[in-house]
Image (cartoon, rainbow, N blue to C red; front, side):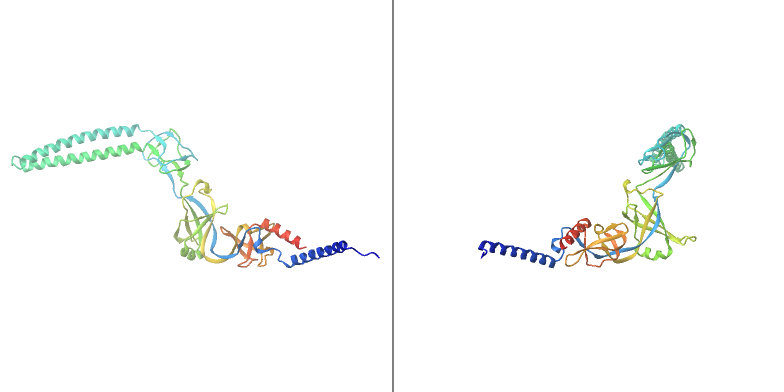
Length: 364
């Protein structure tokens, strides 16, 4: 009868042992957690409570702090208009040139009067000094001395009057060159070349974009909290927030609407801010503070109407959990429901989703 050799027996034994080790490895794999905490191939964050500002969003209107209309300060005819609507003007730039023939003639006349007054004063002063020198020797009468002194003082007064007249004439001449009081943009033009203007006639209007503020009407029931905290933010369309430098609260309410007018004074902003006078913006006024759960923005997944995060439990298992969020903040999203303090979330939802599917496939 045939008996198996030693080689055949060894091959059968090796096959049985290999199958046994394979089964043991599978059982050991099922007994381990799906994902080990130390082996997460993506960053995670812990959901914590943060102190958030309780606020009310109100509509406000942007306006320029510096806005004015330049008017003529002397009479003349418009010779040149160097800027038009929507042109940018630097501070001190010449914007309108008026005729100056009459003003130059007045300057020349004032200069002549000043020269005459100066000569008369020099003569009267010399006469007074001569009489004063011999008055002590009693060679002239006291009446003569008083006359000389009065003539000197009168000449000095005429000299001062002539100097003031010259300054006024020169100032009137400078008024023929209308210059921008500050850097800004021309918003309106009221005259044309060739028109005659008189003092008070409007010439140009302009605004400066360097300093802006927001006018907002605040309901009276919010005024106590607003006066207590005196803090507000302007919310741009992009979601960016601009903190107010200060608030100007009017001390009376509008009897028609029962609202208080509040000026939200903004810091100096560049042209890239996107704010222009006349725009409507959202203004968040601070009413208090509260501690709320906040989840980082990178962890939140938006799929149609579902808002969710990938949560990692203490054993390292990954789960896709729907949450309800509130306000979007610079730190992330305010969480209203669906997650607890101390739970960990994945900061790379795409990688976390792929990793969760791979581990589920291996487990099956």
